Amino acid sequence: MRPVLGVGALFLSAAALAGAPEPAGDPGRIAFQKCYACHDVTPGNDVAGPSLHAIVGRPIAARPGYEYSAALRALAEREGRWNEALLDRFIADPEAVAPGTSMTFTGMRDPRERADLIAWLGRQSE
Image (cartoon, rainbow, N blue to C red; front, side, top):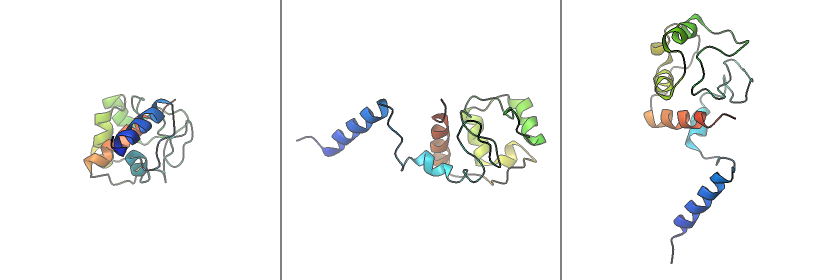
């Protein structure tokens, strides 16, 4: 007799390959709940903060029509593009990475939660 978990895992893998929507319990999506009051992942939908659609690899402070703080523009001069390592540091402590940022989020301390969020954000692109 094969374990049910094995069949379930096979089903989930097949569903993922078929482009099925992500499960509601995705840990990255859950972590994003701390961000969605100010950010969206819909392309071009800036809320209080810029859209995070396709943020991984995107130039920092470069969304057309969005007015970034001097702190984020300075970060863009130093770092250029968002990558996983920079996002991890920024999400952990935005003020330490971009002193003077207008973002009021104080940081996400749990490294696993940040990794889940960054992985989920990485999947939010066309």
